[in-house]
Length: 451
Image (cartoon, rainbow, N blue to C red):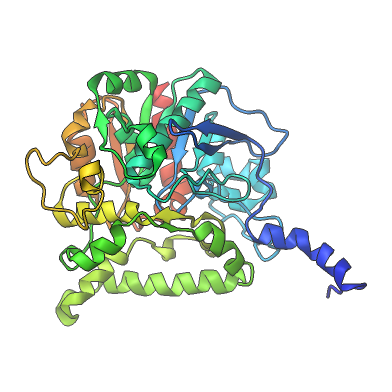
């Protein structure tokens, strides 16, 4: 039993460091780099090394971007030093690389860190947060509320990749999870936006692209790595979303500031409560998604679209880590675009882009020469070799759809590969139980082949 003595002030001073850490300030500040976007914002990047005294790698950089509602900590699962209830032990059949690593010996939860695995394979791992995403000293600048998926992909991702190239002088492999994968292959299409208009904040300009910029970027990049990369999403009830009220609410440029809210909420919740709630909720969703449809009402199709986290495939400590540290801020405008894509079956810029569309309440049906930039029409500009890991559940990202968009659309390369991991969902495909034994080695082997 622990007891505290002395004045209330002394008690407050003793508890303050713990409270700050509980609010997300885990001491992971080593490796901080800043990238400046074309519209003048500073993004936070972390160059990975397992300890502050470890050497950074000087090999091929691997630049990873997170998915929507997540930050880059999803790529570096670890035990927060203040959470004494984290006591994960490696499984008896853990692979040799994990059992022999002293860092994993000191913190077994590092077993699920993709950044650490790639570091062990000799790669220079970089992780980046988009504008208004992140915490614990890695929170990028806010910018204005008028932000959407196009801004993240056209301004934030080029700034981060440019920073890595400038620091290392090497051609990187770029990619990430979900939206991170999407933005990376759109970068290779040569997309951009008028940064001065974005900075003014009155409206967002149209996306533009050029073959010459795409050619230059593909020459500067060694390869693409997608972890359930996003595109046209699978919404089981997309037709129900196609209504003016829903799309108008989503279409606004509002920030959902989870980085300001969640740390305080999570500071009062025990990990057992967090992981137990997540585990029970998503296991029920998975059962309903897999159930025979004949005895269920028609609306139950929604569970197939919600089956994006297979908690049966994720350790409870990793679940808690995600809820406590990884879930992050996002803009409703990003969600609005994915909804438009699901409803209309296209990949295009946001329907409010362009001064003429600034007050448009909802997207119109796709039409020839409607003034919008269609990402799906420019996929062939991506020429670098690509490797993707897909989830089996196909909630949010459907494997067959994305294989067609990404690998059917890009210019073929003999080193293009992809695989679908059995028993996985969209979230756990990155850090689930199967990742260290299937996904991580497959990614490492493909990267080695590029060398």
